[in-house]
Length: 322
Image (cartoon, rainbow, N blue to C red; front, side, top):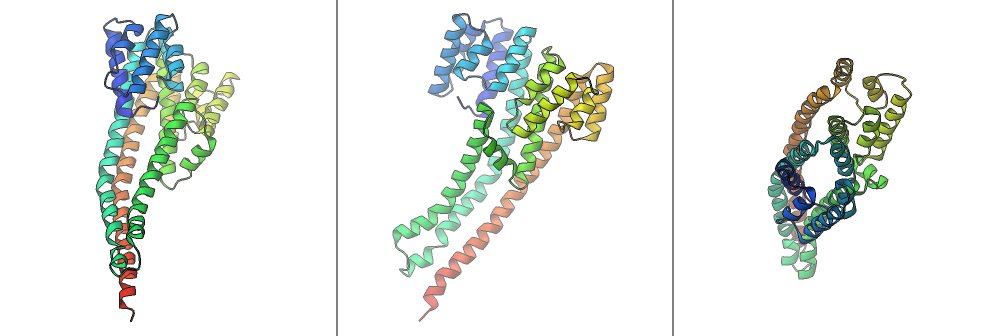
């Protein structure tokens, strides 16, 4: 069940409200999600039915695919520690922040995409006017580039969501991370998401040795998952402290963050310093995503201008021939 970030944020917000009101999960899943698509409502009903039969929330959510794999582990830990309401609220905030970011990116790309669509319809018109191409050829040239671009973006978004849902797809992960500029941003975003999962697990009372490998499984990048697993194995052998291990295995690549984690570890307040560091990383990532969203339209405009010039010149060049 692939929901948008907006939908998942609203879903977890409703679950937090129901938990705070003392409504059992079996009843809650019957009452929520009425604004979701039909397949999502069916999955919620299946979850409620499994809960009514005695299944725990994590197992029922996993069976119906209402919960993503990494959410299942967090829910199981939070349920054990009696902190479901806190977890639901944090997940709602997490997805709300992700939805706001995606909305800003989309809003800044809508106008450039419309300009590109207009340009593709204008550029081949001279060739149609002089009879060099027919109506079918004109429509192919006019509609092909926008459709290919839109389809490519949708495919990338679908591949990323599938990775989060199934925790598989090494090929897709490498493809996404290999993209210029965007790949680096996605890598930093996934490192941030892995530490976010670690924080939620620690807040739910999961020991660090158990929380670290579970947090690693929440990210889509298989290389980063391996780093989390290696750090957990090294930490179990008591080779070094938590902060040094996270840095040595590449889970954290920020020297200042490592120093902050070391101080929190020494004071027994690791969860608090991770929360503080995540706020800093969120601000940095938000700035980088905004910068990307600011420059992508400019590149679009330059590409559209070049496309129009080449298309119009090539169209009129045939008319200039005797």
